[in-house]
Length: 186
Image 1 (cartoon, rainbow, N blue to C red):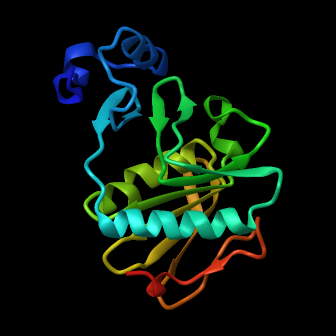
Image 2: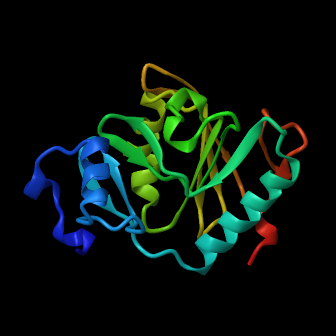
């Protein structure tokens, strides 16, 4: 069944358990590209060259210097709450955890790479990550290669948001050897 045929209107407010049952019953294909945001299915659009290139380059750079007790997840489904499943483009969390056991506070870094979803990722989705205690969030604009770095969330709000331009170096405190500039990628 196509994901677009499934809507929150059809099913009411959904939970992660509902999604798992729908996948088991083959109402939703395991490869369907969507997130569950506060009980609502949000389909994800196709990803184009700039998105995929940035995701790959940042992911490979992180993987090269990642500490042995951490893992770099590519499009990992994170079950943040009973009614919230997100799939950041990249995330870093403790290796000892299975992806389905990762909770917001376990996520050291979530990275959203966006062009068409930039407003959503910078606004409501950034607040969602803060509310679940994700430690750091990067929202990368594929058009300008500018990254909004969100840090130190408390009470569902980010206490520090800074902008790193494409020609400036992005750094991640949890992995001191990580450094990347986004203006070098086509």
